[in-house]
Image: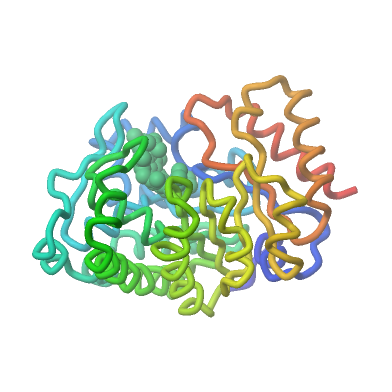
Length: 343
Ligand code: CP3
């Protein structure tokens, strides 16, 4: 299907764009009252994610309300552990929790490689509905967690500031760690390919906990699996976003991906030098800027756009939008990107 607005895809491929495309990580859910209304009509996040018609509805809300240049499928990175045999719960005000975690070689053995057809059909179905309802208005982004970030949740069993149980496994049993990372990677590749077959126009891999590793461990336990994913996906552009991995930027230059996401700690010019001219950069406004006045938001957004330059940039925040952000402030960010970059 032809896209009426393909700015995101052209920017990712390094083709010329008449202005900078803009979307927000975690734009679906979290900040919109319209999302909360849908969520409250169901038993919670997981039921919503598993009801394709409603998941499709909240995926499209930000396109209609915020006027972003892309939709991102409403789901979660934790559907992969669930498909491998570790179901999760979403505890109100606390976040995800896994009743069962991975501790031993037997536990790793017992996990299956995620099969998108049999275990993740609800996401694939939601993508098909979104594509039909969007009717080419904007591209649809598919996504998955990076193997290392998924590994963290499968061992730790919940969020954590340090993920020290997961990090302990890397030291205590590197071989078993690689075995688990490979199993996650194999399922993730199949899952991303299924999302693309269903209509995803670009895919993003979130390595949210990249920043907790020392650089040498990151090169050993995360980058090789990101590389496998990037090498396997040739159908659509791939974006790698590794929060906190400032130390791995030179390594990312060698990944077979089109776009690298920057968080707000990463200097833009330095990132461009390290990552090179052949990739698109995405990001990286500090999400807390959106707590400022409209004037402050507009100024910070323009300063960011000046640093990235007009091409090979996808405007976004440096991480997901915070849940208590006023949607009106988000609109100031989006409108500023559109107007200022059109000049
Ligand atoms: O970007 C989008 O809008 C699409 C949907 C999306 C969700 N999660 C929905 C969600 C995406 C892309 C994610 C990715 C995700 N999930 C990541 C990587 C991105 C990042 O922020 O670093 C991570 C680490 C998770 C795991 C996760 N899911 C946590 C820690 C939590 C609890 C805290 C939170 O974010 O609210 C979730 C829950 C979750 N995932 C919600 C949504 C809309 C909130 C659930 C609710 O409505 O109660």
